Amino acid sequence: MITRTTEWPAPAKLNLFLYITGRRADGYHELQTLFQFLDHSDTLTITANSSDQITLTPAIDGVKTEDNLIYRAADMLRQKAGIQAGADIHINKILPMGGGLGGGSSDAATTLVALNYLWQTNLSVEELAELGLALGADVPVFVRGVSAFAEGVGEQLQPAEPEEKWYLVVKPEVNIATVDIFTHPGLKRDSKKRSLSALLAGVYENDCEKIVRSLHPEVDKALSWLLEYAPSRLTGTGACVFAEFSTHEAAIATLNKLPDWLQGFVAKGVNTSPLLTALNAHSTDCQ
Image (cartoon, rainbow, N blue to C red):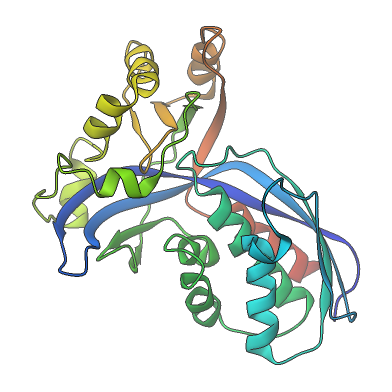
């Protein structure tokens, strides 16, 4: 067991495109989507120990520690490995909740990857991804740590290398429940399935965007503003929207023009997750 205190990033992701190609009999939707990471992350500070206790700070109002995805991820790994182990975990949370950036899933994935290393449980990436899938459909993407094209209900992943652009991400002051979007009768569910090469060569769109903009004027207003400056769209089911730029300078210039009613940040799209980079760095330090 590695007991020194270490820091681990839990990065945001964007859905660069999202198409809904059908709906299964069980109610789940068939998707084609492209995940890319951002170099903008929550940070988990973790100290492993042999106490068999998992502590998590700071507490989230109204959420029991045992229900937190970070705690659940740690407990699942401990049970899977059949070990007595504990950890003190502190999170510096900067990714917005319910924004479509994958913050909760990323936090869970970072917990799995970090504690697998610190506890020296030696589970494979595939085993960690399988554990993560029980916590959320997006967790395996973060565990694997490479940008990916996803199909099926999001579980069929293949590595992808979209262009690494700069993004201005803003979150309108609204919270959106994913279930409300995917159950909406007006949601587009008949996009044509296409190959990854065809999708990468086309104009990126999000089939959820029309419904989200119609239901949430705040999102519509934010997107309308961004579209004046650059190609812009919704990530996931929102509420975050993003504009893409070829340079950092152009993204910052637009950030500086944001009206008072919008808050945002600039980040680089990266095809190798900051989490994977951190894992490799920690592993090198111990050699």
